[in-house]
Length: 229
Image (cartoon, rainbow, N blue to C red; front, side, top):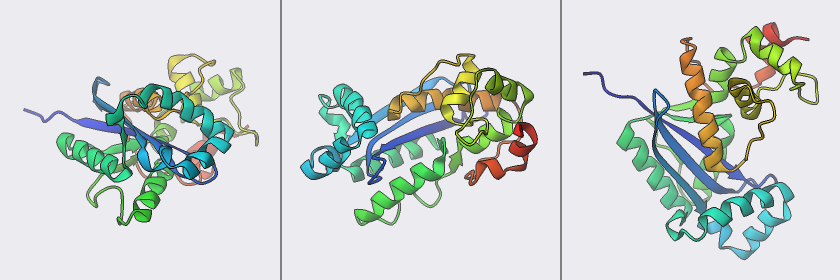
């Protein structure tokens, strides 16, 4: 019997200025996209520290996201945990399901989590044998690399300020759901749910999965080939 495969979709929310991680969530799915387990945590060191919470609330974008998450989670005290307890819980879930960890623009999440772990005296957030995959790279090679995606972006004016076609999780989710008006919540748990759908859409293309960190995405030859205006 083939062992069932599971995948952890991870997302973090940070302050845009101080890069403090205050909202962490994961959604574990199987290869068909069924949700197996979810968890969402607020980081106690940030939200219960007057000075650090003040930094968070002075940033308008972060403050709005925080209020949305806070209203949902703060009354559930088990969800407000020290950062290293969150780290332990996530490591335990990875071991339980023997799953890779996937995030959209993983380099950002990986760096933020690792830096915070180091600040608290740990070498890293993940273990050395954790599989780390970048969903943005997967989407670039499977979903964005199509004329249909280019046509969708052109039709609905999904361009960056510099004129490139967008390749954000939001724009790709708009494409796979054919809903150009969709707006990403930018809260950790909600973002893992849409990114889980993006991952399954990538899997369904039956193409080679590129999982490495994306780097400079618009320098990628596939992106230049398909999306040059």
